[in-house]
Image (cartoon, rainbow, N blue to C red):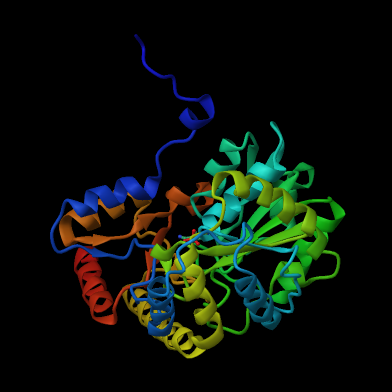
Length: 381
Ligand code: PMP
């Protein structure tokens, strides 16, 4: 008996590079983790109360497959601030986190062998999800000298014009990079010229520190070829409630919903009540968190500069992506963890162009950040 055989497409995907690192950190005491990808804040109290009250009122059944109508309408209002107009009936799908929405898109759009271009360094789920769906991944390496902005030049270099899909994420995890309207316009032109479908992960859209977010779907001729992802995990600090959404052309959203209705049925009900409240009445909480992140971001960048660590001024999400003082970022991260109990993630976990860098999350209290920076300074000495 050889036991069940694991599918080739699953065996192809190695375990997450981040997870291995966390397992190491978990075994140690007194570790300050700058490795996390989730807010240290709790969800706004009004959102939590709405969730509790929905349970107390017995609202514990499935919702519509696409999500509660009121939530989709509220989302449609909310996204107006990014010049996005989507029909709640046909063009919005509420999912179990942005993660589910991304996975559904690959499953709905990718045929075996389709080419999925992924702008890297990238969030760790895109490549595995594309492979699980049978796609062939083509990494597009953005450059440190461009501050990790995606350009037509790097897209050309990677032959991304031949791809079927292009995945990008700005504000970016892991670099914290954002893209200006002019920079995005060039990528939009490339996508139109090469007839690419764009998957734009904008989950950090509310966390920008140098001007408003622009969505690539807001450019002429882009809405019809773009799927936008957002959710409640980051700006609303609701990671564990597992709620997100996708915006896209009705044919794509309908196809995604076909997969969703047989696999998830509907996104969890309780967080949908929290999400309605979050969008309708929690702007001040989001702004309070954003302004604390900004304060921490400036603090970390200034400490790096004092220590002589090179780091571009990342203006989004809650990450900075400094150059590693050693050639081998994995060895550096491991030694820093073992000697000073500070966890950072080596940039290679996010693709080749992340090599020589470290992802440092500032979703950690200022006091802890202060201690971590002092320990880093000691380590470098
Ligand atoms: N996209 C990016 C860029 C992320 O950083 C994360 C969370 N780490 C997700 C998607 C997944 O978010 P959710 O909790 O909504 O599934």
